[in-house]
Length: 257
Image 1: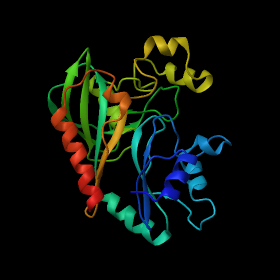
Image 2 (image 1 turned 60 degrees about the vertical axis):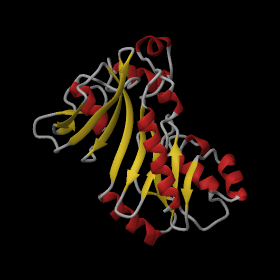
Image 3 (image 1 turned 90 degrees about the horizontal axis):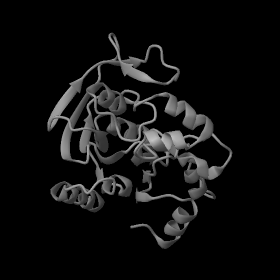
């Protein structure tokens, strides 16, 4: 539990803090927030908000890992240089758990073992794809519930390639709901970068962000987890009580050490 002064600073910096120690701070990043700054506004990036939170101290926050702009969930940040190296080593052996809403209904569980590399012929420079000769990439999935033409999946990336989960699910034929780049038409992504949310995006996408969230992080020494985010939980009337209970239990175990 945070101290009262820390809670006030967290509210002022618009941070959702899961846990903080002398060595690290773990936050629940909202979807739509970039990790690194692209604008002058201090609130427009996670690092900007962290610097506001630590203003007046000698802490210089450094990301141990990051998430895409529209992906929500757990992000680990070190508070001191020696701890940063140790935490990076921890993350090398980490198991990461995600929740995602996808179009359609995949098989109940499976593994995608397909190489990922730069997408050929795309108008978007950063776009990736399953390509021959790409980097080995493996993703495990499990269907938690399906209804209304969508499915709620638990995802575990075995490898850590750029946009891996989004690329693999597009290749599988079940792209993430709300994904502007790996969804129905990549020009939606270009339109969004130039004009923000438009009537065309409203018509073609079922959600304003890609419904993907990092809800669990397990390393040799730590175990952290958070509940399903509200926008994913409310997208459909999902039935996954046992799964929700397990997620909460993991969070309790992490907090008590």
